[in-house]
Image (cartoon, rainbow, N blue to C red; front, side, top):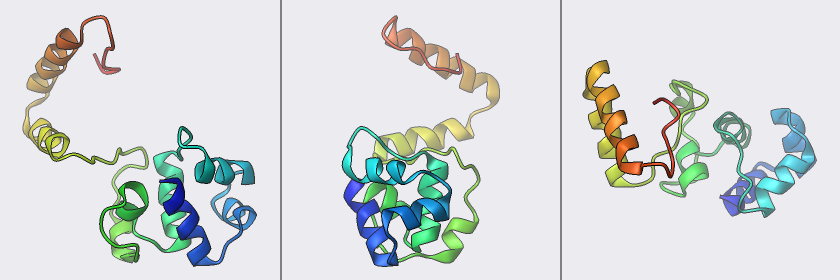
Length: 125
C-alpha cells in the first residue's frame, strides 16, 4: 500500500506536506504511510487520500482495479471505518453473515470464538 499512496500523491502533484494539509494529518503520517509497511492509514484517512488524489479507493487500498477515480464510487461509502475485504473466502463469509438474523450472527461469533480458543477473541463477543 505504501507505494500506491506515494504514486497517488505524486500523480496528484502533492508533496507529502501538501497532502497532509489537505487531509488534515501531520506530514510525518504521510511519510510513515509511504515508507513503513507496518503503519497504514485508517479507513477514514484512506478515503481522504483517494478523494484528494482522485484515485480509486479499491486500487489504493488493495491494488485491484485501475488507479483512475470513479467519483461516484466514493459517494456511497457507508462507513468510514469499513474494512477492505481482499480474499474471496472473506467476501463470501461477509455476504453470508449479512444475510443472517442477529441471533444467528451471535451464534456464529460464539462458534468462531470457541474455535479460536484463548488465542484471540472477537471484540463483539
